[in-house]
Length: 486
Ligand SMILES: Cc1cc2nc3c(=O)[nH]c(=O)nc-3n(C[C@H](O)[C@H](O)[C@H](O)COP(=O)(O)OP(=O)(O)OC[C@H]3O[C@@H](n4cnc5c(N)ncnc54)[C@H](O)[C@@H]3O)c2cc1C
Image (tube, rainbow, N blue to C red; front, side, top):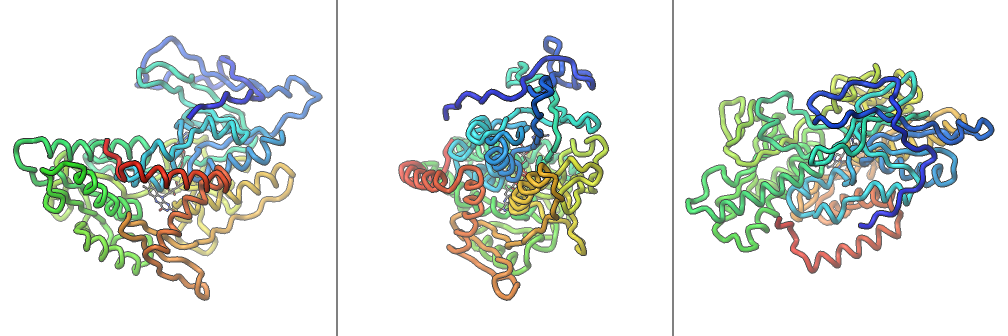
């Protein structure tokens, strides 16, 4: 996609040394000496007659952050009412709930990834690439690490950005609880790169098995998925279909029913432990009908190159292992100039979504921890939470700029949907019958599931572009394989 030239920002970068200049981080390649750059004072600071714009900085352009910054850019950036900046470590955005489809190969990353530079240009905010590594709350600055290309050459230096209002929306990571071998041998589906890496490994495993002289070994084409939350469960169904599709494109030495095996492993006593029990039952029946092995009450004690070791003493041979269990805030949150974090390392926020110790800093989505009054569990780390919080904060930032008091965030649970690939979708919708939940399954559930992604797309591009894009994709899918083969 061609990228239009970036709009000229109000402030430009200079290579001055910042007051909090730090040593080069350990383990980075040695280059010509770097200097931490600071964002120059906005234009109006040098002209006392001109009012300086309020600076809103959003860190993390995911399900919540990108919707927020797009709406702020359209409403405030475009009209010159605020200077809106997105700080994001990646160059492109993919809605995270699609990652299991990328991993399985049923979705091509290039078709759905959104270029941050282009989005910033079209929606009147500034995009600054970089990973947040700290905060200077006294001087209200976000500190970013230097970034390097694949050859180790410096792309952007260490630098810092000033803010008046800061929103942290950097998501969370799965939690391997320090399980031996998990980092080395299991892939976590947290980024597009990881999902694409898993898919390449899957295709390579099939190609290897097809070309080798000896018969397929036990475990060679087995996939173990650790964690049967929504991510793991959805991946197991999606993989079942796509692995068979890959083989169907001519890898006839592989017998899918005999050679390919998928095992879903869960430490709790049922799969989808965070969702209604009825939903778990329906999903297990469907997965078992496909031949997916479901192991509950199975705690993983180690991951090895050849499989997964269980606390019971059992061993599940598998060449491919996915870690999809647990949720934990990124490590950087523990070092944000004293901001309060929960036991799972998420930023603790008040009902206004402000952090407990700093009125000017907000957190939304998976990286935030909000315990609603009278409840014992925090809000769930889901796309619908991030989406609702982004919509709420958009209104609150406008109120803050107008000097009005902030309103509390109220979460509405619309239910949960689990996509089982092309086989089915199951879910529960909340509040449909006298405030009670209603189980749904099949085509209607699939439609509802897809509408979650459409809502995200519409928040980013508007209804018209989403309709045209959807039509174009459905036409092109007729001329392309239904599974990614490389
Ligand atoms: C495979 C999978 C399937 C899922 N399915 C569903 C589902 O069906 N329904 C549902 O409701 N939820 C689902 N989820 C959960 C959902 O994706 C998350 O709840 C949602 O994406 C959270 O949004 P967020 O904005 O908080 O964070 P994210 O969407 O994770 O975005 C965080 C962004 O911050 C950036 N970032 C991270 N660290 C830094 C840093 N230090 N500096 C700068 N940038 C940084 C990241 O690159 C990323 O762009 C799924 C998750 C996964 C992984």
